[in-house]
Image (cartoon, rainbow, N blue to C red; front, side, top):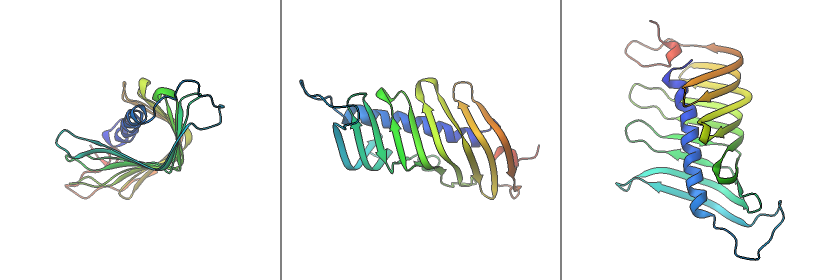
Length: 201
């Protein structure tokens, strides 16, 4: 289970968190001298949050949209409601991540995507649309690590792979599906690329 199809999904999440951390670092400014607040009181809130990072040629690289972003100055964490992050790649296809909420820890050390997490890559060329569905994902960018203890579903065309628990280390390219791994696979038509497990050698 170390093929490119599965590996692309966690790599997108790590790139998404890096982009999110970049935006938070530049958007959220420290409070002025003498300002105090409780741990549960937000010090900064943006409604209809939207940010775009551009390539040097003026095209979009990342786009982040959220219903709202709330920053908590006491521990420098942030919460996003209904976040949608898009990564644009002219050489392949747009990849996106959506969730009900995202919580980003201090300095972007980690992030939790919670509720109806949906990672998707659009089809392009002979490559099928690919998706990952789960209810929770924990991302640790400094360790290049993505993990969850919840059920995950990978979908590529009419092929589906299910498991409970996932850990992906981008440094070692090692993917662990922890338990209850099962799937239903469709052999792609001749000349069409499929997921790694669909290919016969």
